[in-house]
Length: 581
View 1 (spheres, rainbow, N blue to C red):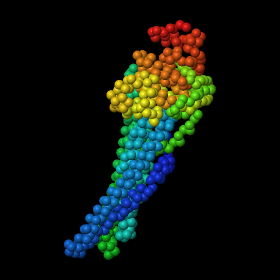
View 2: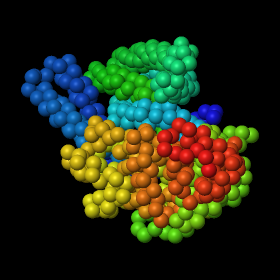
View 3: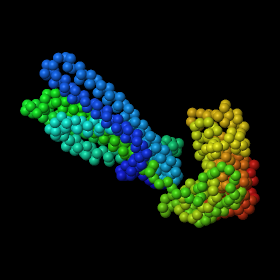
View 4: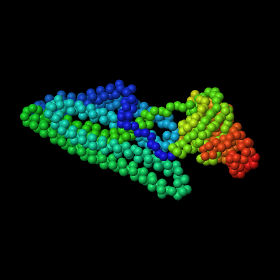
């Protein structure tokens, strides 16, 4: 299956998504902005007050004359600090609220992605978005957003203050703008593609690492360690090279900003000399103007330097929005979620079912299948025959390429890959029915032979399982999955080799548990062991994606066809079974 990365949003779509998230938070945004405006304005009183001190000293005024401007300087500093802290708190709260909304939307869309779409993208792409991209955007929201808001306000209000001192000071300061604007445009033009490529390269690197680690035993078996290490190294080199290109770009960016600072400060000082010489301004005013421009160094450099973080964060944000802003798939008739309550009567009807994961390479061809209410049908075939694909299509995990699947409301799929969530075992079971009581949980555990060992755990149903908790065996995990099935009480149950993880010792225990869990339901069982087929009401045999036989176990054995061959080959390795009809 070829890789097809998850979508990345365009800049326009990213802006639209961010606006939708921020719109409900307009009031705290305006309040925070207003407080920062007042705080910045209070801070801008410092330079004129210092200029006043310079004038008083130049005029040889007594020391008592300095008390008032000194007291005002202290008050201005205190007011600026308090109001800035309050305003930044509101801005940070706004950012965290918006980020939480984005995270929730992202997780919601990820969970609704069709499984085949997620598989085509690969776990590395999704993992890098969930971890690296979300972390990068979160860091930008916590640090860059408040700093950028404060810096932009300082720049605008400082330029206004320069104009109030004398418009010629403002003109002199603006001589630095062309250099800064050219630097910013140059940086954005070059940074956007670099950071976008870097995020993609990081996702590919993670995918290669995951593939290599997950298949480590196979890699070692075929002595392919060197080839896989080279692939990992190649992906890593690509990511590092892009990172270093970004670092070099940032260094050139800062060097150009220093040129702009020199041009602007030299122009303001020259203007001050000329204005003081012809009597248009005093020394204190010229001093205030020079201090204003010098104080612009920090906000301007901060705002422009944040372009680096902004470009990196915007690339990550586009990758998050690309998933979070996707339209969820329309619900189809077949994959209705399982609902608690009495079992809904109904069977399964499959007509002309065909499916291909890649165009031109079908894995199922014209499959017809009927399962009556309460009937258990076993699906048998060699590896690669299409059993799991058919099971997932009936469960609604995939949309078929052609044909129809009709099921009643309530379909549940249990596979051999069972995940146990970290937390109390009771919470793990309640995923199937959140309102279930402890008695309901015990009633679901009993028929799958799990109640005894659950009650023997250190804290019973309250025992913490999963990551960092009590370790469960493969058979115990499968029993929990079957207990969830009983709790969900679906009309249709699909077991895809749900007893394969037990090993020979626990196989019969799990098979009995599975029989009880599907009792009274229409059930499709992908049979890992043919004992499951022997106890089923009907057996369907798949070969190369086609149904080649169907009927009761005894009839198919007597017919001497493909199923009889499967049974004979399997029975030779199973003590206590009869290979002949």
